[in-house]
Length: 116
Image (cartoon, rainbow, N blue to C red; front, side):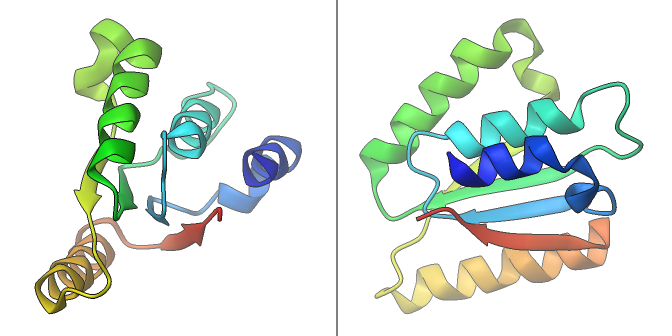
């Protein structure tokens, strides 16, 4: 919650960010808050890709439910996608690395965040 408050208090922090990959997204609060902040008409850029990751399938299920609750009919326009990442799995780590590379190649400037 503190990171969402920080972004809200200083929106220019995200001004040049086109993509975000969040480590440990939990219920999706930060993803929802960040995307809504960037959808503000006063923001000069939008988040093209937001990847919410978590090791817990239950957390990602709650994240999906919260995305539906917050974006409703506009969910198809929401840039948030989810990825289960178990850091003890070499396959998951490789998939995660590929997502970072793809986001950088396709969307340019981005950032990795962890709200833990």
